[in-house]
Image (cartoon, rainbow, N blue to C red):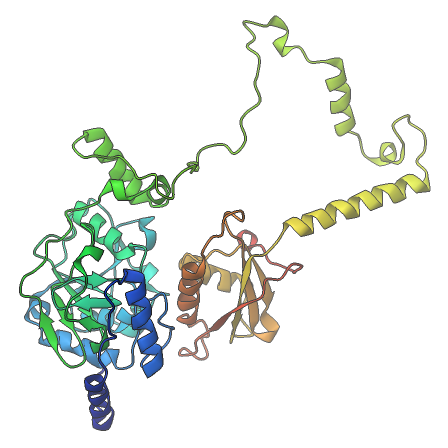
Length: 459
Protein backbone atom coordinates (compact mmCIF):
# COMPACT_ATOMS: atom_id res chain seq x y z
CA UNK A 1 0.00 0.00 0.00
CA UNK A 2 1.47 3.30 -1.11
CA UNK A 3 0.68 6.49 0.81
CA UNK A 4 -0.77 9.50 -0.92
CA UNK A 5 2.26 11.66 -1.74
CA UNK A 6 0.27 14.58 -3.12
CA UNK A 7 1.03 17.48 -0.79
CA UNK A 8 -2.00 19.56 -1.75
CA UNK A 9 -4.38 16.64 -1.21
CA UNK A 10 -2.89 15.84 2.19
CA UNK A 11 -3.04 19.48 3.34
CA UNK A 12 -6.64 19.69 2.17
CA UNK A 13 -7.54 16.47 3.98
CA UNK A 14 -5.92 17.55 7.26
CA UNK A 15 -7.58 20.94 7.16
CA UNK A 16 -10.94 19.34 6.59
CA UNK A 17 -10.37 16.97 9.51
CA UNK A 18 -9.63 19.91 11.80
CA UNK A 19 -12.84 21.68 10.82
CA UNK A 20 -15.14 18.68 11.22
CA UNK A 21 -16.19 17.82 14.77
CA UNK A 22 -18.18 14.84 16.09
CA UNK A 23 -21.97 15.23 16.17
CA UNK A 24 -23.51 16.59 19.38
CA UNK A 25 -25.09 13.91 21.57
CA UNK A 26 -28.32 14.43 23.49
CA UNK A 27 -28.97 13.35 27.07
CA UNK A 28 -30.85 10.20 26.15
CA UNK A 29 -28.91 8.48 23.41
CA UNK A 30 -28.81 4.85 22.33
CA UNK A 31 -26.19 3.03 20.31
CA UNK A 32 -28.48 3.13 17.31
CA UNK A 33 -29.05 6.89 17.47
CA UNK A 34 -25.31 7.50 17.83
CA UNK A 35 -24.63 5.32 14.78
CA UNK A 36 -27.22 7.19 12.73
CA UNK A 37 -25.74 10.57 13.68
CA UNK A 38 -22.24 9.46 12.68
CA UNK A 39 -23.43 7.98 9.37
CA UNK A 40 -25.42 11.12 8.55
CA UNK A 41 -22.43 13.30 9.41
CA UNK A 42 -20.27 11.35 6.94
CA UNK A 43 -22.91 11.69 4.23
CA UNK A 44 -23.46 15.41 4.84
CA UNK A 45 -19.73 16.22 4.65
CA UNK A 46 -19.21 13.88 1.67
CA UNK A 47 -16.30 12.14 3.32
CA UNK A 48 -17.37 8.61 2.41
CA UNK A 49 -16.22 6.30 -0.38
CA UNK A 50 -17.72 3.01 -1.51
CA UNK A 51 -19.74 1.48 0.10
CA UNK A 52 -22.38 3.70 1.71
CA UNK A 53 -21.80 4.15 5.45
CA UNK A 54 -25.25 3.21 6.78
CA UNK A 55 -25.15 -0.18 8.44
CA UNK A 56 -21.37 -0.48 7.99
CA UNK A 57 -17.99 0.55 9.30
CA UNK A 58 -17.43 3.90 7.48
CA UNK A 59 -14.90 3.72 4.66
CA UNK A 60 -13.89 7.38 4.58
CA UNK A 61 -11.75 9.39 2.17
CA UNK A 62 -8.09 9.32 3.20
CA UNK A 63 -8.27 6.09 5.18
CA UNK A 64 -5.18 4.77 3.33
CA UNK A 65 -3.06 7.67 4.63
CA UNK A 66 -4.57 7.26 8.10
CA UNK A 67 -3.66 3.58 8.13
CA UNK A 68 -0.01 4.48 7.52
CA UNK A 69 0.10 5.88 11.07
CA UNK A 70 0.15 2.26 12.25
CA UNK A 71 3.81 2.06 11.25
CA UNK A 72 4.64 4.68 13.92
CA UNK A 73 3.00 2.61 16.68
CA UNK A 74 5.55 0.67 18.81
CA UNK A 75 3.04 -2.14 19.41
CA UNK A 76 2.61 -2.61 15.66
CA UNK A 77 6.36 -2.54 15.01
CA UNK A 78 6.95 -5.25 17.60
CA UNK A 79 3.97 -7.43 16.60
CA UNK A 80 4.70 -10.62 14.67
CA UNK A 81 1.09 -11.62 14.00
CA UNK A 82 -1.89 -9.33 13.46
CA UNK A 83 -5.59 -10.16 13.07
CA UNK A 84 -7.70 -7.70 11.07
CA UNK A 85 -11.47 -7.89 10.77
CA UNK A 86 -13.01 -8.34 7.33
CA UNK A 87 -14.66 -4.92 6.95
CA UNK A 88 -14.14 -3.10 3.64
CA UNK A 89 -12.79 -0.06 5.51
CA UNK A 90 -9.90 -2.18 6.88
CA UNK A 91 -8.64 -3.33 3.47
CA UNK A 92 -5.68 -0.93 3.62
CA UNK A 93 -4.82 -2.19 7.15
CA UNK A 94 -4.68 -5.79 5.92
CA UNK A 95 -2.47 -4.72 3.03
CA UNK A 96 -0.12 -2.82 5.36
CA UNK A 97 0.31 -5.89 7.59
CA UNK A 98 1.51 -7.96 4.62
CA UNK A 99 3.81 -5.20 3.39
CA UNK A 100 5.53 -5.18 6.79
CA UNK A 101 6.16 -8.95 6.60
CA UNK A 102 3.82 -9.85 9.45
CA UNK A 103 1.47 -12.83 9.67
CA UNK A 104 -2.04 -11.72 8.71
CA UNK A 105 -5.10 -13.48 10.13
CA UNK A 106 -8.70 -12.76 9.19
CA UNK A 107 -11.78 -14.07 11.06
CA UNK A 108 -13.75 -16.54 8.95
CA UNK A 109 -17.33 -15.29 8.38
CA UNK A 110 -19.80 -16.93 10.80
CA UNK A 111 -17.12 -19.44 11.92
CA UNK A 112 -18.49 -22.23 9.73
CA UNK A 113 -15.23 -23.99 8.86
CA UNK A 114 -12.47 -22.58 11.01
CA UNK A 115 -11.59 -19.91 13.54
CA UNK A 116 -9.47 -17.75 11.24
CA UNK A 117 -7.80 -17.67 7.85
CA UNK A 118 -4.07 -17.12 7.53
CA UNK A 119 -3.27 -15.20 4.34
CA UNK A 120 -0.43 -16.95 2.53
CA UNK A 121 1.76 -14.80 0.28
CA UNK A 122 3.57 -16.10 -2.81
CA UNK A 123 6.15 -14.21 -4.83
CA UNK A 124 3.76 -13.57 -7.71
CA UNK A 125 0.83 -12.44 -5.53
CA UNK A 126 -0.41 -8.87 -5.39
CA UNK A 127 -1.10 -7.72 -1.81
CA UNK A 128 -4.11 -5.67 -2.84
CA UNK A 129 -5.72 -8.73 -4.42
CA UNK A 130 -4.92 -11.00 -1.47
CA UNK A 131 -6.61 -8.75 1.10
CA UNK A 132 -9.79 -8.11 -0.91
CA UNK A 133 -12.92 -9.72 0.45
CA UNK A 134 -13.26 -11.88 -2.66
CA UNK A 135 -9.90 -13.66 -2.21
CA UNK A 136 -9.65 -13.88 1.58
CA UNK A 137 -11.41 -17.26 1.53
CA UNK A 138 -8.39 -18.79 -0.22
CA UNK A 139 -6.19 -18.50 2.88
CA UNK A 140 -5.13 -21.40 5.09
CA UNK A 141 -7.61 -22.58 7.68
CA UNK A 142 -6.64 -22.00 11.30
CA UNK A 143 -8.52 -24.41 13.56
CA UNK A 144 -9.42 -24.19 17.22
CA UNK A 145 -6.65 -26.60 18.17
CA UNK A 146 -3.79 -24.94 16.23
CA UNK A 147 -2.78 -22.79 19.19
CA UNK A 148 -2.36 -19.52 17.28
CA UNK A 149 -2.22 -16.33 19.40
CA UNK A 150 -2.07 -12.91 17.73
CA UNK A 151 -0.19 -9.92 19.11
CA UNK A 152 -2.55 -7.24 17.78
CA UNK A 153 -6.21 -7.06 16.80
CA UNK A 154 -7.42 -4.32 14.43
CA UNK A 155 -11.17 -3.67 14.50
CA UNK A 156 -13.49 -1.23 12.80
CA UNK A 157 -15.73 1.19 14.70
CA UNK A 158 -18.64 3.50 14.06
CA UNK A 159 -18.00 5.56 17.21
CA UNK A 160 -15.38 5.47 19.97
CA UNK A 161 -14.58 7.48 23.07
CA UNK A 162 -11.19 8.54 24.38
CA UNK A 163 -11.91 6.32 27.38
CA UNK A 164 -11.85 3.21 25.16
CA UNK A 165 -15.56 2.52 24.72
CA UNK A 166 -16.46 1.36 21.23
CA UNK A 167 -19.67 1.14 19.18
CA UNK A 168 -19.61 -1.16 16.16
CA UNK A 169 -21.97 -1.57 13.23
CA UNK A 170 -24.56 -3.38 15.34
CA UNK A 171 -25.80 -6.92 16.09
CA UNK A 172 -22.65 -7.75 18.06
CA UNK A 173 -20.67 -9.45 15.28
CA UNK A 174 -17.27 -8.18 16.44
CA UNK A 175 -18.08 -8.85 20.11
CA UNK A 176 -19.00 -12.45 19.31
CA UNK A 177 -15.83 -12.91 17.27
CA UNK A 178 -13.69 -11.52 20.08
CA UNK A 179 -15.44 -13.80 22.60
CA UNK A 180 -14.66 -16.87 20.50
CA UNK A 181 -11.06 -15.73 20.05
CA UNK A 182 -10.77 -15.39 23.82
CA UNK A 183 -12.29 -18.83 24.47
CA UNK A 184 -9.87 -20.53 22.08
CA UNK A 185 -6.92 -18.39 23.31
CA UNK A 186 -6.34 -16.72 19.95
CA UNK A 187 -6.22 -13.44 21.93
CA UNK A 188 -5.55 -12.62 25.57
CA UNK A 189 -5.65 -9.57 27.82
CA UNK A 190 -2.23 -8.47 26.53
CA UNK A 191 -3.40 -8.41 22.90
CA UNK A 192 -3.53 -4.76 21.79
CA UNK A 193 -6.85 -3.75 20.20
CA UNK A 194 -6.52 -0.93 17.67
CA UNK A 195 -9.24 0.89 15.74
CA UNK A 196 -8.81 3.18 12.72
CA UNK A 197 -11.44 5.93 12.53
CA UNK A 198 -12.06 9.49 11.36
CA UNK A 199 -11.84 12.38 13.82
CA UNK A 200 -15.61 12.89 13.69
CA UNK A 201 -16.06 9.38 15.12
CA UNK A 202 -14.08 10.16 18.29
CA UNK A 203 -16.06 11.47 21.29
CA UNK A 204 -14.70 12.71 24.59
CA UNK A 205 -17.07 10.33 26.38
CA UNK A 206 -20.00 8.04 25.65
CA UNK A 207 -22.82 7.07 28.06
CA UNK A 208 -21.44 4.20 30.12
CA UNK A 209 -24.87 2.67 30.72
CA UNK A 210 -25.01 1.77 26.99
CA UNK A 211 -22.21 -0.77 27.32
CA UNK A 212 -22.50 -4.32 28.58
CA UNK A 213 -19.99 -6.84 29.90
CA UNK A 214 -19.59 -8.42 26.43
CA UNK A 215 -18.73 -5.15 24.61
CA UNK A 216 -15.16 -5.11 23.31
CA UNK A 217 -13.14 -1.96 24.21
CA UNK A 218 -10.14 -0.53 22.35
CA UNK A 219 -6.63 0.33 23.54
CA UNK A 220 -5.43 2.58 20.69
CA UNK A 221 -7.39 4.97 18.43
CA UNK A 222 -5.78 6.10 15.17
CA UNK A 223 -7.23 9.08 13.27
CA UNK A 224 -5.94 11.17 10.35
CA UNK A 225 -4.58 13.84 12.75
CA UNK A 226 -3.60 12.01 15.94
CA UNK A 227 -3.01 8.74 17.75
CA UNK A 228 -4.87 8.33 21.05
CA UNK A 229 -3.53 5.88 23.64
CA UNK A 230 -6.14 4.91 26.22
CA UNK A 231 -4.49 5.46 29.59
CA UNK A 232 -6.87 3.54 31.87
CA UNK A 233 -7.58 0.47 29.81
CA UNK A 234 -11.04 -1.01 30.21
CA UNK A 235 -11.51 -4.68 31.19
CA UNK A 236 -11.92 -7.00 28.23
CA UNK A 237 -14.62 -9.70 27.99
CA UNK A 238 -13.45 -13.06 29.36
CA UNK A 239 -15.22 -15.04 26.65
CA UNK A 240 -18.72 -16.03 25.54
CA UNK A 241 -21.76 -15.19 27.67
CA UNK A 242 -24.26 -17.91 26.83
CA UNK A 243 -27.19 -16.16 28.49
CA UNK A 244 -26.86 -13.42 25.84
CA UNK A 245 -27.26 -15.88 22.94
CA UNK A 246 -30.33 -17.78 21.75
CA UNK A 247 -30.67 -21.19 20.19
CA UNK A 248 -30.75 -19.87 16.64
CA UNK A 249 -27.48 -17.97 17.03
CA UNK A 250 -25.69 -21.04 18.39
CA UNK A 251 -27.07 -23.37 15.73
CA UNK A 252 -25.99 -21.03 12.91
CA UNK A 253 -22.28 -21.17 13.85
CA UNK A 254 -20.42 -24.46 13.92
CA UNK A 255 -17.67 -23.38 16.33
CA UNK A 256 -20.28 -22.06 18.76
CA UNK A 257 -21.97 -25.45 18.72
CA UNK A 258 -18.67 -27.17 19.54
CA UNK A 259 -17.87 -24.74 22.36
CA UNK A 260 -21.40 -24.96 23.75
CA UNK A 261 -21.19 -28.77 23.86
CA UNK A 262 -17.85 -28.60 25.68
CA UNK A 263 -19.09 -26.15 28.32
CA UNK A 264 -22.32 -28.08 28.82
CA UNK A 265 -20.42 -31.33 29.28
CA UNK A 266 -17.90 -29.90 31.74
CA UNK A 267 -20.66 -28.15 33.76
CA UNK A 268 -18.16 -25.48 34.81
CA UNK A 269 -20.05 -22.74 32.97
CA UNK A 270 -23.65 -21.63 32.97
CA UNK A 271 -24.93 -22.70 29.53
CA UNK A 272 -28.46 -21.38 29.88
CA UNK A 273 -29.39 -19.71 26.60
CA UNK A 274 -31.55 -16.64 26.25
CA UNK A 275 -35.12 -17.10 25.01
CA UNK A 276 -35.10 -13.67 23.41
CA UNK A 277 -35.75 -13.90 19.65
CA UNK A 278 -35.53 -17.65 20.01
CA UNK A 279 -39.03 -18.54 21.17
CA UNK A 280 -40.50 -21.25 19.02
CA UNK A 281 -37.21 -21.84 17.22
CA UNK A 282 -36.87 -25.35 15.82
CA UNK A 283 -33.38 -26.78 15.42
CA UNK A 284 -32.47 -27.75 11.87
CA UNK A 285 -32.64 -31.46 12.64
CA UNK A 286 -36.31 -31.32 13.66
CA UNK A 287 -38.71 -32.61 11.08
CA UNK A 288 -41.14 -30.06 9.82
CA UNK A 289 -43.99 -32.53 9.89
CA UNK A 290 -44.43 -35.28 12.44
CA UNK A 291 -44.25 -38.87 11.26
CA UNK A 292 -47.45 -40.83 10.89
CA UNK A 293 -48.17 -43.17 13.75
CA UNK A 294 -47.28 -46.76 12.89
CA UNK A 295 -48.60 -49.83 14.52
CA UNK A 296 -46.43 -52.21 16.48
CA UNK A 297 -46.36 -55.70 14.85
CA UNK A 298 -46.05 -57.30 18.25
CA UNK A 299 -49.19 -55.66 19.59
CA UNK A 300 -51.13 -55.85 16.32
CA UNK A 301 -50.50 -58.99 14.16
CA UNK A 302 -52.36 -57.39 11.23
CA UNK A 303 -50.08 -54.33 11.16
CA UNK A 304 -47.96 -55.66 8.27
CA UNK A 305 -50.94 -56.87 6.27
CA UNK A 306 -51.44 -54.85 3.09
CA UNK A 307 -55.00 -53.93 2.22
CA UNK A 308 -56.31 -55.08 -1.15
CA UNK A 309 -57.29 -51.51 -2.07
CA UNK A 310 -53.71 -50.38 -1.44
CA UNK A 311 -52.49 -53.00 -3.91
CA UNK A 312 -54.87 -51.71 -6.57
CA UNK A 313 -53.75 -48.13 -5.95
CA UNK A 314 -50.11 -49.15 -6.30
CA UNK A 315 -50.89 -50.85 -9.61
CA UNK A 316 -52.48 -47.66 -10.91
CA UNK A 317 -49.39 -45.66 -9.97
CA UNK A 318 -47.17 -48.19 -11.74
CA UNK A 319 -49.22 -48.07 -14.91
CA UNK A 320 -47.27 -49.42 -17.87
CA UNK A 321 -46.06 -47.60 -20.97
CA UNK A 322 -46.96 -47.87 -24.62
CA UNK A 323 -50.47 -48.91 -25.56
CA UNK A 324 -51.70 -49.10 -21.94
CA UNK A 325 -51.27 -45.33 -21.56
CA UNK A 326 -53.71 -44.85 -24.41
CA UNK A 327 -56.46 -46.68 -22.56
CA UNK A 328 -58.76 -45.63 -19.75
CA UNK A 329 -59.20 -47.31 -16.41
CA UNK A 330 -61.62 -49.85 -17.89
CA UNK A 331 -59.18 -50.71 -20.76
CA UNK A 332 -61.28 -48.79 -23.30
CA UNK A 333 -59.58 -46.55 -25.89
CA UNK A 334 -59.17 -42.97 -24.72
CA UNK A 335 -61.12 -40.20 -26.40
CA UNK A 336 -59.85 -36.84 -27.62
CA UNK A 337 -61.70 -35.13 -24.76
CA UNK A 338 -59.76 -37.14 -22.16
CA UNK A 339 -56.48 -36.03 -23.72
CA UNK A 340 -57.61 -32.39 -23.54
CA UNK A 341 -58.49 -32.84 -19.86
CA UNK A 342 -55.02 -34.23 -19.13
CA UNK A 343 -53.38 -31.35 -20.99
CA UNK A 344 -55.40 -28.83 -18.96
CA UNK A 345 -54.45 -30.51 -15.69
CA UNK A 346 -50.81 -30.56 -16.73
CA UNK A 347 -50.81 -26.85 -17.54
CA UNK A 348 -52.43 -26.09 -14.18
CA UNK A 349 -49.73 -28.05 -12.37
CA UNK A 350 -46.99 -26.24 -14.28
CA UNK A 351 -48.56 -22.89 -13.51
CA UNK A 352 -48.69 -23.79 -9.82
CA UNK A 353 -45.00 -24.69 -9.90
CA UNK A 354 -44.17 -21.34 -11.49
CA UNK A 355 -46.12 -19.50 -8.82
CA UNK A 356 -44.33 -21.38 -6.05
CA UNK A 357 -40.95 -20.62 -7.60
CA UNK A 358 -40.84 -17.03 -6.43
CA UNK A 359 -37.65 -14.99 -6.37
CA UNK A 360 -37.35 -12.65 -3.39
CA UNK A 361 -34.44 -10.55 -4.67
CA UNK A 362 -31.99 -10.58 -7.57
CA UNK A 363 -28.55 -9.16 -8.30
CA UNK A 364 -27.53 -8.02 -11.78
CA UNK A 365 -23.85 -8.60 -12.58
CA UNK A 366 -22.42 -6.75 -15.59
CA UNK A 367 -19.01 -6.14 -17.16
CA UNK A 368 -18.46 -9.90 -17.60
CA UNK A 369 -16.06 -11.11 -20.26
CA UNK A 370 -18.25 -12.30 -23.15
CA UNK A 371 -15.96 -15.28 -23.70
CA UNK A 372 -16.37 -16.54 -20.13
CA UNK A 373 -18.05 -19.90 -19.65
CA UNK A 374 -20.82 -20.40 -17.14
CA UNK A 375 -18.98 -23.13 -15.24
CA UNK A 376 -15.95 -20.86 -14.66
CA UNK A 377 -18.15 -18.07 -13.29
CA UNK A 378 -20.05 -20.42 -10.98
CA UNK A 379 -16.79 -21.98 -9.79
CA UNK A 380 -15.45 -18.53 -8.85
CA UNK A 381 -18.64 -17.84 -6.88
CA UNK A 382 -18.45 -21.15 -5.02
CA UNK A 383 -14.84 -20.52 -4.02
CA UNK A 384 -16.05 -17.38 -2.25
CA UNK A 385 -19.02 -19.11 -0.63
CA UNK A 386 -21.62 -17.34 -2.82
CA UNK A 387 -24.49 -19.73 -3.52
CA UNK A 388 -27.56 -18.19 -5.21
CA UNK A 389 -30.76 -20.16 -5.68
CA UNK A 390 -30.35 -20.02 -9.46
CA UNK A 391 -28.64 -18.01 -12.20
CA UNK A 392 -29.88 -16.38 -15.40
CA UNK A 393 -26.88 -16.43 -17.73
CA UNK A 394 -26.62 -14.01 -20.66
CA UNK A 395 -22.91 -14.27 -21.28
CA UNK A 396 -23.03 -13.03 -24.86
CA UNK A 397 -24.15 -9.66 -23.55
CA UNK A 398 -21.74 -9.76 -20.58
CA UNK A 399 -24.63 -9.94 -18.08
CA UNK A 400 -25.98 -12.44 -15.60
CA UNK A 401 -28.55 -12.41 -12.79
CA UNK A 402 -28.15 -14.07 -9.39
CA UNK A 403 -31.51 -14.95 -7.82
CA UNK A 404 -32.09 -15.54 -4.12
CA UNK A 405 -34.95 -16.88 -2.01
CA UNK A 406 -35.40 -16.07 1.67
CA UNK A 407 -35.11 -18.96 4.10
CA UNK A 408 -38.32 -18.08 5.88
CA UNK A 409 -40.82 -16.05 3.89
CA UNK A 410 -43.32 -15.83 6.73
CA UNK A 411 -40.92 -13.73 8.79
CA UNK A 412 -39.84 -10.26 7.75
CA UNK A 413 -36.23 -11.29 7.36
CA UNK A 414 -33.62 -8.53 7.04
CA UNK A 415 -31.22 -9.60 4.30
CA UNK A 416 -29.62 -6.21 3.62
CA UNK A 417 -26.32 -7.18 5.33
CA UNK A 418 -26.10 -10.43 3.37
CA UNK A 419 -26.83 -8.63 0.08
CA UNK A 420 -24.21 -5.96 0.74
CA UNK A 421 -21.59 -8.59 1.63
CA UNK A 422 -22.24 -10.47 -1.63
CA UNK A 423 -22.08 -7.23 -3.63
CA UNK A 424 -18.71 -6.29 -2.10
CA UNK A 425 -17.22 -9.72 -2.76
CA UNK A 426 -18.38 -9.83 -6.40
CA UNK A 427 -17.21 -6.29 -7.09
CA UNK A 428 -13.72 -7.25 -5.97
CA UNK A 429 -13.59 -10.16 -8.44
CA UNK A 430 -11.27 -9.90 -11.43
CA UNK A 431 -12.17 -12.72 -13.81
CA UNK A 432 -11.14 -11.22 -17.16
CA UNK A 433 -7.75 -12.66 -18.21
CA UNK A 434 -7.41 -10.01 -20.95
CA UNK A 435 -7.92 -7.14 -18.47
CA UNK A 436 -6.69 -8.26 -14.99
CA UNK A 437 -7.68 -4.95 -13.34
CA UNK A 438 -11.24 -5.04 -14.66
CA UNK A 439 -13.88 -5.31 -11.91
CA UNK A 440 -17.44 -6.57 -12.11
CA UNK A 441 -20.41 -4.27 -11.55
CA UNK A 442 -23.27 -5.40 -9.31
CA UNK A 443 -26.60 -3.84 -8.43
CA UNK A 444 -29.89 -4.98 -6.89
CA UNK A 445 -32.79 -5.31 -9.34
CA UNK A 446 -36.48 -6.10 -9.02
CA UNK A 447 -37.25 -9.81 -8.45
CA UNK A 448 -38.09 -11.73 -11.63
CA UNK A 449 -40.90 -14.28 -11.49
CA UNK A 450 -40.50 -16.16 -14.80
CA UNK A 451 -36.89 -16.73 -15.74
CA UNK A 452 -34.67 -19.05 -17.72
CA UNK A 453 -32.18 -20.21 -15.13
CA UNK A 454 -29.07 -22.26 -14.81
CA UNK A 455 -29.05 -24.54 -11.78
CA UNK A 456 -25.87 -23.82 -9.82
CA UNK A 457 -25.45 -27.43 -8.78
CA UNK A 458 -25.71 -28.66 -12.36
CA UNK A 459 -22.97 -26.47 -13.81
